[in-house]
Image: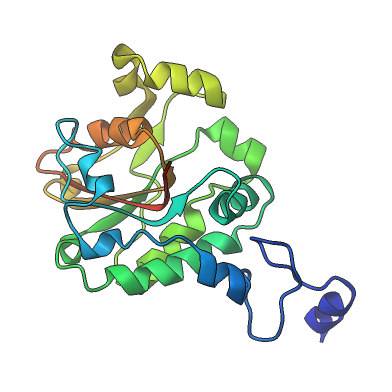
Amino acid sequence: MFQTLINLFFPPVCAGCHSFLVTNENVICTLCRHNLPLTNHHLNRDNEAFKKFYGRIPVEHTSALLYFHKKGIVQELIHNLKYKGQEEIGTVLGEWYADDLKNSTILQSVNEIIPVPLHKRKLRERGYNQVTNFGTTLSAGLKIPYNPNLLVRNIYSKTQSKKDLLNRSEGIDSIFDVVFSEKDHNKHFLLIDDVLTTGSTLEACSHALLKIPGAKISIVCMAMAHS
């Protein structure tokens, strides 16, 4: 009853185009969902996302659900998720991608889902990690435990300074670290993030995870930057 009154005075709008949602639409309207640029990476192991890490880190699987174009629907979704508190976007994308990934034979050996972490200060400022709902929803759909505590970020930085640091090879291994014990040995970790761009952040995270003896890495993102 209370939610009905809220919807009456503040009708929910699409997170992609801001049009009013109609009955049975959730977070993203039918038109936006139909127009989302799907990558279909899950159908081809040797896809463009996988190739980004050739010669950089050993990965078992890499994929993204959507293509990210400047001024496109996906950019609007990620912006609203990351800066407007619309965490339910991560839930919806996680539900969709779990359906695609559940038949992946490679991912069936994954032991834990690991989010790219925010620094504690950044987490306090934003109030949430934008990949949390995506990760917990994948966890439920794929029946794989979600572990937000294994990987930690040591360095707080604003976006541009973070890019500068990631572009300096001597700084990469200092940004992230792992807190692990013997029970974490020989595990296959699924590392998740919002947008795959240069891959530097994910590479730095993977270097940290690979400190764990016998670790294997797979990577899944909500979107991938595409020209």
